[in-house]
Amino acid sequence: MALPITGTTVKQQHLDWAAAGSLLAGLPGGALNLGHEAVDRHVAEGRGERVALTFLGRRYERKTLTYAQLADATSRAAQVLLDLGVQPGDTVAVLLGRTSELYLAALGSWKAGAVFCPLFGAFGPGPLKSRLELARAKVLIATEPLYQRKIAALRGSLPDLQHVLLVGEDGAAPAPHDGCADFNALVAAAQPASIVETNAQSPAFVHFTSGTTGTPKGALHNHGAVLSHLVTGRQVFDLTAADVYWCTADPGWITNTAYALVSPLVNGCMSVVDEAEFDPRRWYGVLKDEKVTVWYTTPTNIRMMMRYGAALARIYRENSLRLAASVGEPLNPEAVAWGDKALGAPFLDTWWQTETGAIAIANLPGHAKPGSMGLPLPGVEAAVVNRNLSKIEVLTEIDAVGELALKADLPSLFTAYVGDANRYQASFCEGWYLTGDLVRRDADGFFWFVGRSDDMIKSAGHTIGPFEIECTLMDHPAVAEIGVVGRPDLLLREVPVAFVSLNPGFEPGEALRLELLYFARQELGSALAPREILFVEAMPKTTTGKILRRALKAKALAEPEEDQPVTLAVAPGRFDDE
Ligand code: PRX
Image (cartoon, rainbow, N blue to C red; front, side):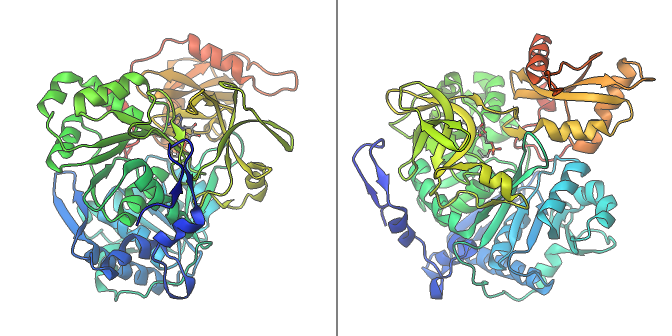
């Protein structure tokens, strides 16, 4: 069935979200469940024998699941959760790689009416603890090594966490651990559950993103978001059942939930799920051997592929790609052109956020401007605005720079920051959601990214809040004051660097620098830890005593940029920090 779109050009097109709702199958009595839309619907409509997922293990072990097999396994995973006493709205946190268990955990949670909350494996115990606490996770499904290294010692300080289910190396049975059970064994023994009756407003998944101040923000999304994932999968990628689709995102990132889990499945195509980390030869091989037709990745990954040069690209020139797209940070025109030359498909940049839950602005085939974020998708109203207290001024002048605002009627838009109603409300004004991104719109209606309106750091596509790093390092006895800013990096776009002033009795020097770097890495994990510690005698301050980040940023810019070896990169595809 075609999308209910009116208008002739992309710029004029309008999508009727209410009419688009009829694209969803739904359940009797008006219920709507993500798990049903993504999987069981295809079985009910006679497509159960189609391959839904092809998993590639680290050593290229290959496993496929048809939609019928996935429906059965995820219903059994749902029963496991129900047997543990999971109630609708309870949170199931997940620390897993890109493996079949991730799909069982997500879809099983949705079928059981629970809220799926994937976390970054590259976070350290501190950030994981604060997120598990904020989400009030009742169940954690984790790989055995991640649980042992990062959670086991915290277990006693997480009173809400009642159950831990483990997955051993390569899906094998985990060794016995106190208070933990074997996830795969429980799934194998369970009977398939009936899907719990959720509706469009029922909470479905929460992803944490960083804030400039305070605790991380847990953006909550409802089952109704599935409509955006279905529609944008068609609008941006033109997904059909004939496609082989590959998204390289880390499971902790919402890109994985929205565009590796939900969008390809609701659109009935086949997804490749590669467990391994970035490796250029492997990635070219996956594109070629799996006959991938649609590929979604990030600028950092693209830059890493580009670094390996044209010779390697030539070996793998033959592929089946018809569309390649990118997300997470601006994509420079050189990278767009490189895609065309090396892969035969230029990269189309797409823009969205954890809060928007789905792509909102994108370059589309035939409607692309390299270097831009693209055009708002039909169904998305976007504006450049000035926010003055509780008033919004829409800037209509061409190329005027202002904050990007979206009309707050998107099915996938977040519905809460868990436990922080004030922050949620502060993100909206006069019916607009304010994104915090500074943009301009050109004469053709294309949006161009200018920067953030706050102090957020973008590293390898990840949004990092300086506050969380600062709080953790303040726990070290040597640190008197600290300010963290992003320093430009050729590969990762930015890396966090920390300026530190010391308490009396501590001397700046190499030994203390390494100690602080090690302390940060242990506590925060590789995804958040600062790459450099720079000692300052006194912190630059505003007249009101706040750390002057602008001055620190200028100091960071004056530091020579290190050209990090590729193997040290914290790429979005990177899962483990050992
Ligand atoms: O600043 C924008 C940048 O990434 C932010 C969203 O980060 P996060 O919530 O972690 O990502 C979720 C999934 C995308 C945005 O506010 N960003 C994202 N895409 C682009 C971008 N900046 C420029 N161009 C993009 N295409």
